[in-house]
Length: 227
Image (cartoon, rainbow, N blue to C red; front, side):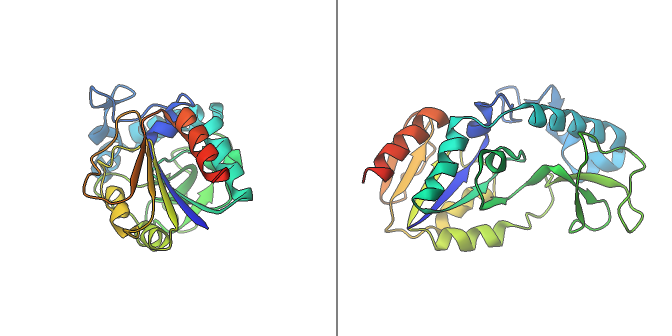
């Protein structure tokens, strides 16, 4: 059985990583449009670079939580594919082997000139003056507001193949990721794990688990493995 799982900020929050979707609309005290747009990079690349260097340090200091670990363990029972909106590498560090990052991954850099040129980052920083093979400044491998989401078509194809779909810790507020549920076959079961269930009334065969990620994923494992 192919289990497709879409994860959002709620699963990483339990590892201590904050999201820009805080109630004050700020991300670690910054307006997202000052640190997460191509225009911000053009205006003040040093600020943007240091912002992501600090976020990267936080990611590297964080540890996968039980929800990440259980999703990795499910691979011993099912064909599991994870699509994540998160830019951290916690799914991979927990042991998941099929992870599609919609919004990039902060532990890699990319060319300022050609986004398809990406590189692993040694340590926690990208320094100003570090360049790609084309001689262009390296920047975080993260999809900013206003940029295309290159993996969205791959993710949509994965969703179409699902025998079971799970949504964890996402409000379905950020597009195009929020539209992926529309590619999931209508007839299959869809589990929604979140203390605040997003608006999914128009979808069929939805099972709500109104818990945080760790408790909800543990509950999901009991349901699926004992089924």
